[in-house]
Length: 208
Ligand code: ADP
Ligand code: TYD
Image 1 (cartoon, rainbow, N blue to C red):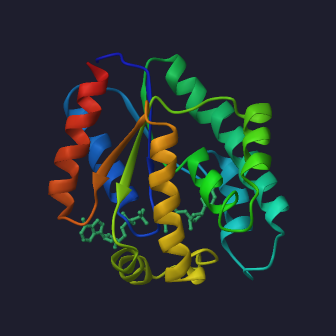
Image 2 (image 1 turned 60 degrees about the vertical axis):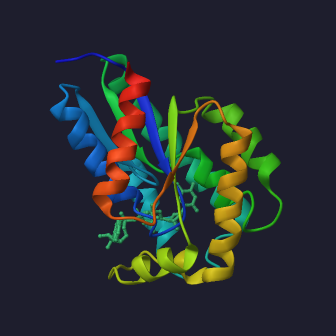
Image 3 (image 1 turned 120 degrees about the horizontal axis):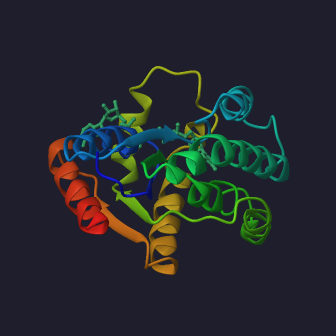
């Protein structure tokens, strides 16, 4: 088994193919001999999965923007303590579908200008960035069609529609600029295999 403690995250708008690509990358890295933990946010530990249903189900106005930041950060703290950090300590690769960049975008940008609050809470309670972040970038219209084709009760955010998704896409691209050292942008508007080829190549380059 190869050792290579590395924390890789996927970011992008709803329906861009993050979970598909996270799964394909985990498989590709396992084939290469790495010990991989595939996880997601919100969630990734029993406590954080409970918080996931609180934030993703129910009325869109269920929580204020500030309360939502606290809930996502609480979930992340539990996920970090119980899943991510222990796996990295054992030399595993952690592949995670969304992380703090999603809070910077969804809570920090889409519901008012709360980016400072998000960053302060992150510094206080999380204090850890991924080693590599793959931004799956694509046309929001396509992402929304894909996301809507899934049957799920988790639709508080998808309900915001295409205008928000456009804003999110631009926001994620700006974030990739801000954290250029760890972000890589991948064109998600292609077949899953074509996207996965790029993703795997970039990840393996980083592991080397
Ligand atoms: P995300 O996690 O970013 O919301 P998913 O991986 O769940 O995206 O993909 C959303 C939907 O689109 C799923 O039904 C999935 O099977 C499909 N899908 C994923 N990647 C592609 C792709 N490259 N081309 C076409 N459909 C895709
Ligand atoms: P996810 O299950 O990744 O949804 P999708 O597969 O549609 O991309 O995430 C669920 C929703 O949670 C998504 O709309 C984005 C939102 N979210 C936040 O608002 N803040 C966060 O910090 C995270 C991690 C997710």
